[in-house]
Length: 336
View 1: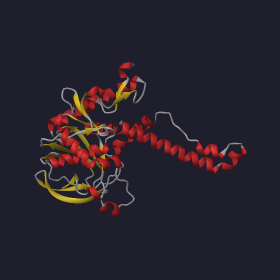
View 2: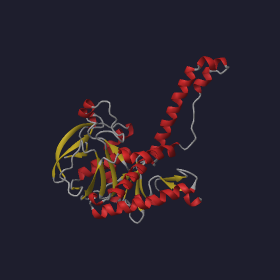
View 3: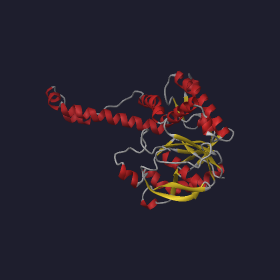
View 4: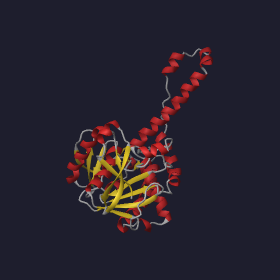
């Protein structure tokens, strides 16, 4: 059982895509210290999911399938060559990776505890007279709260894993090929859900009731780096158009576009940013410095759409406006 004690919330096979000889560069956004680490020691914790070894064994088996599909996708540079079965398996990977992280675990536990305590308060309030008659002190009950020690994270993962892929199967896949000297990076929460359209004023005005990053949200985008030179993007074809792409791919030649995509990882991370080449660390520090106060405040809002020459064609891009002071500092692809 001890061999399954150290459990990864970002799998080793995926981390190796961003490593050199199994060594990956780890940048801590709190300490701003960068140092090399072995992939087996990154994004892991003792018994993160369960003390039952079958859980980790099951993860290892399906991770082998995901590794096969991602390796083939990068080798072929062609999303249209993925058959229906492998496409469905890859959708499972995206949402499984999204839900298995430390950040998602904390959020799911926080949400469940909030909901349970909300209904507990209602129950106490509605039955206040009867509880008082039974001799229960209301001041004491007001100070009480429910603490759930069960596998909340596992329940949340299971729910998303079972239903999620069917909710995003209508999204279109496109592969971004990084043809610059700058690499894609990842964080300890590498799958990013974003929405360029509904985070701008026009989208808010037209659809004020819409959630922006729910799996059925109109305008949803999902960014999943596959290595220093590859990133898969899923997008809602009703709001974005990559009509100039060939075989479902777009090559990126502008380092500013790479920076814009990498900033999403900085905003999405829990503790650390990960990358292959240590020579990239100074650029990472620069990006982090520019957006540090917005990352700390967790303020994310897209406000403007601009047009700019990029990828060899005129493309439309959304500007991340973290607040008005940060206007036009970062840009994320929204289509052409």
